[in-house]
Length: 116
Figure 1 (cartoon, helix red, strand yellow):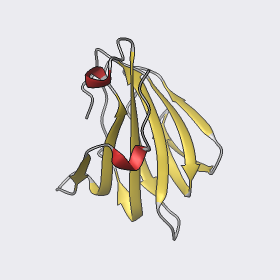
Figure 2: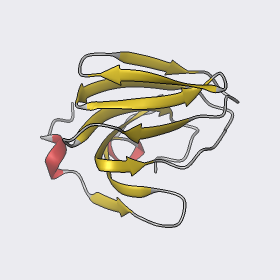
Figure 3: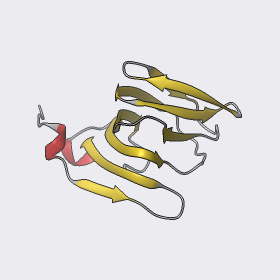
Figure 4: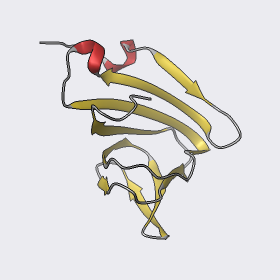
């Protein structure tokens, strides 16, 4: 068994020309013995966003706190605390924080995907 508080996982800051205001942590991954999935926790400042991108694997997302929008199926959809989102593989997608507070979400990907 492996157990920590997610805030204890190593922090990666993402702030560049295609992504803004994001901190990311691999809460559970290969280094912790997870052979099938990787659990990542993202925190995004107001106005922050991921890049618009595609890849072969799906995402399962749980919105822990905050509000935002996700681009998928060629349109933007709003989400809030407690919502869950499935992004199928090969679908162009992007997440942005449209609220006034930090957006925190958990993202599960298969272990074959890059952890961050």
